[in-house]
Image (cartoon, rainbow, N blue to C red; front, side, top):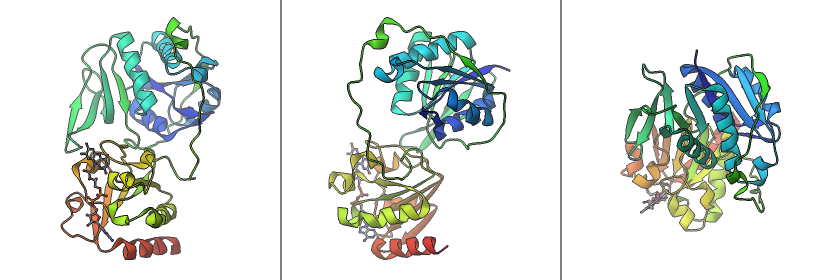
Length: 318
Ligand code: FAD
């Protein structure tokens, strides 16, 4: 069976969920060979093996943290040269997309970004993408070279599938460009203790209807009762009620959780663009004519200041 390279997104050896989802998809088109780079790379091997990696190629060097993405591209290319895979899968993070694009240029391949599904096809893997604010889905395959495909978080289930997970050191020679852009400083974002917005299984978002930063605790309380991330519409962000890092939509983040709860959000096309692929959508809005109700699975017509605390209380009581 053909091997499929999977680029591992991890933090000091803790593998992030989108990578485990990639392993599920990779198994549909071949045998996953994981590529883990940087500090803690070897520590990723056990969990990658549990989720189907037949092999884990690891490399660590100061270049991976001291410089921007080019050293990682050098390493992924070294893995590509060593394995000659049938496809290369990379998580659709900002960094992942840059790594994937640079690799595709180097190996002369076509690239598909932000796939939401992947299946085997007669002429290579076929990726599904959401188009026009997720009003349509398209299926495409790369017709030139080895497909390089980035996949959006929450697009596939995480499935246990024990495999060998043999760990091998990857020999990497850094090119002249690797040290071209040095990282000067890093400022970690203050942790809220909530899941990362783009990776969360549940997202609770607030919009203009929340009517002030001082009321966003209602959205946070509901999110915390569900172990969810907090999102916001652009109207709420522009009003300064919630940080831009939490904005969902065309000019914010794109999320695809199992459950998306929109509170006090009208459902403008630009907001839909970032959440329409959510598996189950719930809206709480006092206007029964709000466009958000056109795409929901469950809708509550009511005042969020009454409905949200009741919902939070009910969930906490269970
Ligand atoms: P509104 O449209 O004002 O809706 C508020 C809703 O709250 C209403 O439906 C109202 O009935 C309801 N409501 C009010 N009070 C209550 C209450 N007490 N209880 C229950 N419901 C209540 N928007 C984004 O969200 N993300 C983007 O990334 C984004 N990018 C954009 C890019 C461009 C180029 C442009 C032009 C626009 C973009 N927008 C984006 C803005 C978008 O067009 C909308 O203006 C925005 O989404 C509206 O936010 P909202 O739904 O919170 O506010």
